[in-house]
Image (cartoon, rainbow, N blue to C red):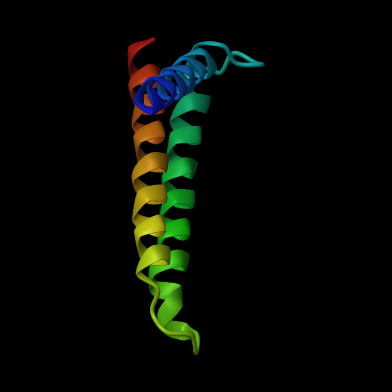
Length: 91
C-alpha cells in the first residue's frame, strides 16, 4: 500500500514539473532562455562549490550529506539548464 502512495506522489511531482515547463508567466525569447540557462549553470556551480568545497574552509568536520546534497543540486540545476538550452535552440 505504501508503494502505491509513493508512486502517486512521484507521478504528481512529474506532472507538476511538466506543467511548469510548459506554462510560464511570461513567454521568453530564445535569447532570454539561453541567458537563463547560462545563469542557472553559474548558480549550480556556485551551489556545488559552496556545499562541497566550502566545507574545507570551516572548522566543522566534512559532511558527506552536504557534499552529496551539493552534487545533487548541481545535477538538478544543470538538467534544468539543459532543458532551457534545448528549448531555446528548438523553438
